[in-house]
Image (cartoon, rainbow, N blue to C red; front, side, top):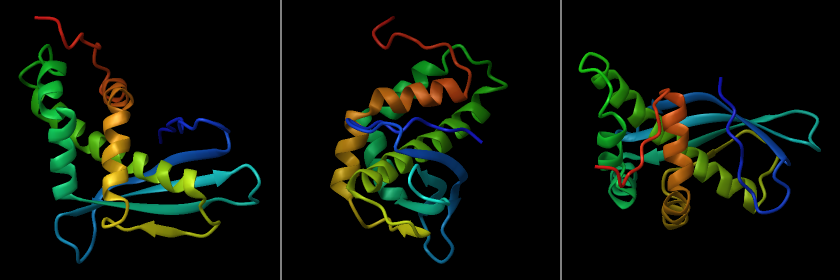
Length: 157
């Protein structure tokens, strides 16, 4: 399991966050995905699990807002035809993970209680959008790293 650094203006090491599982479809809620994270705060005796949901419509909007599809096309330009489809599918999963991580980070910054919980798909929609747009470089770096891609200059021909 991969641990992603939580970016905070203050107290950057207050939480330890690890992706547990996801993205996975949410049962009974078509076109909604969930990532589950293990969260441990330094002052807590134990950790919690936070399910972070995101609707496909939000994913599609965020994809457009940050130009993810265009970025991905460029990022995969040197990947073999054989590996391309699997890398593309995995990149979309990683994009959902990163968006969910951004949403979780909002909860951590606003103060989270020490109990297992779910961040429903219909909360913080505009805040998640603003955060994802602001953290686009973080998201693309995460995907590049996970796929072992060579970073490309987006302005290169």
